Image (cartoon, rainbow, N blue to C red; front, side, top):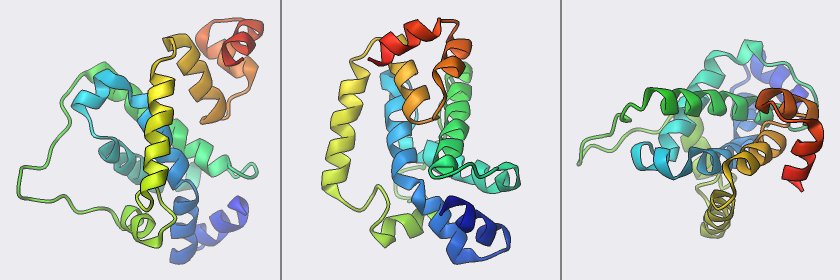
Length: 176
């Protein structure tokens, strides 16, 4: 499904582009919620990070290589990971919209919100995201990082081990 949508989107088919991005919407939203952490969440809104990720993904869509079901969502989560790391390094304040001037949502975010398939559509979905974010937030930093790399960026045990400097056995234990 991802490869077919991508090929149609790359050919300029707007509904396919919207469907491709909507297919990763919930996963990206949850990843950003979990990955921001308490410190960055005081400075940056998850929605801002999601929107910036969508813009980066749209601009770099030609670099995406479909590799099966869920590969687009994993690619978008990696873009978000880089954006969040940049925010953490810079320690800059996010640009906030002044009171009284609502920020316009991108067409893709608006389409996901109004379609009923995005993360903005159901209160129950948001509540379960918050519960998961709280539970993951209570994990030790190395455990949380391993979990996010494995389940959202879809990295292998060896890739996580290489990135973190731990052994694959240690990574397996953390994920357990």
